[in-house]
Image (tube, rainbow, N blue to C red; front, side):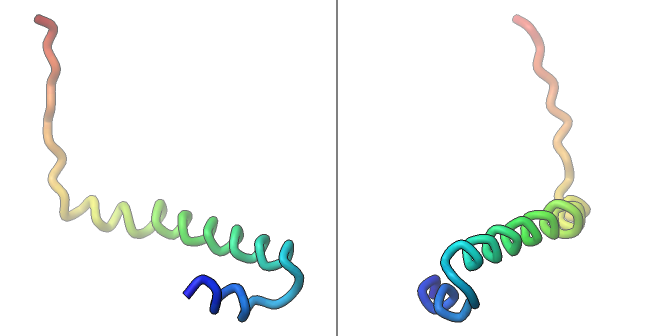
Length: 53
């Protein structure tokens, strides 16, 4: 799968690497700003307290 993706991307190796890094950054940004907040609505936070002995 990764080899097929590498062959489809245009340009020399450094352009392909740059494209993949930008795509990875966009994916991470989408996760942080949209996916994780949406999932948080379904997960109830636990109230955890730690006490000294």
